[in-house]
Length: 198
Image (cartoon, rainbow, N blue to C red):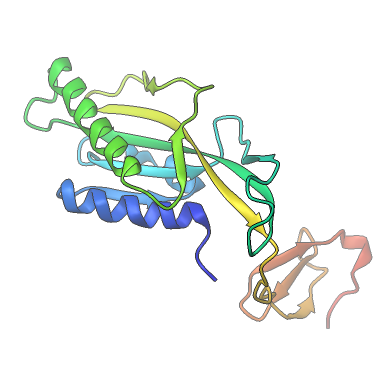
């Protein structure tokens, strides 16, 4: 099975930007947006793709566009995601025109990268604003734009979902967590429902 559509888009955009913008750092995920080195000296040329919009809405659903296709199309998913981009002119850090120009150039590269994706329908979200961060950074230029990505849900056969095997429960943990062989928490359970493992 192919990677999820947004992951495919990320891989394409990352490859495009790494080719055209030397030294750029293109990353994916919720946690990456809030890392403190997104802004500040040394963090320039960084692009973060974040699933969901500013209201944490992931997607909407439309009727199928090609219901007679094979595999059968069940719905159309209209997925939302944010792109946070940060650029800096390190040669002239206190010149607002230089910093704005760095952000403008980064924005143009990012828009070209998304325009070059031809497998999916991607466009800026018409219901949102193109924002510039006003967090009072000493230098650099941070901007955020939201996109929508449309892809079909079909009735094709899917691979088996891998689920970690539960091997023990520990009621002496604060949340009575359930652990897998890898040590990851799978299902938080109320403490009163668990027996202590000796």
